[in-house]
Image 1 (spheres, rainbow, N blue to C red):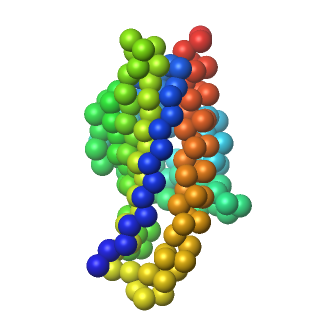
Image 2 (cartoon, rainbow, N blue to C red):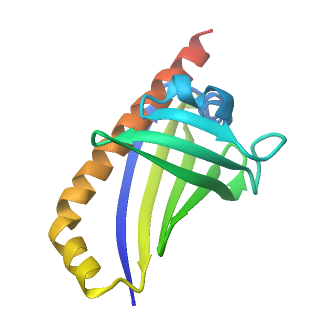
Length: 159
């Protein structure tokens, strides 16, 4: 048995998919561009690609959490999928870029899910009770992330 928590949000960004992609994949600047990221250390050499790994610390809901992220699927300028594991929970984030307005704007869609493999009775109860609040907090965090990405990509587009 598995329990899943899913959130999907989209945001229109007034920048090309290339500018949005640059913001998503330039890990060296993530800490300055993404307000929730307080530390990021790349663990693999080379450019952003399938298999790229990094340790990322985020401040969310007043607490800091560090996760090791890995790129598990990657279609440059179109889509990237990241995974992090914490015990029996797998966090998966899919970012999809869709060009708009003759490629002068981009629709960025973020699909996030947390899959708890074989949750115990207490875990199932906690997920049921806290689930709606957890979904709202996840949505708020993802909106902040997309706003930060938009601001950085739009700044790139104007230079």
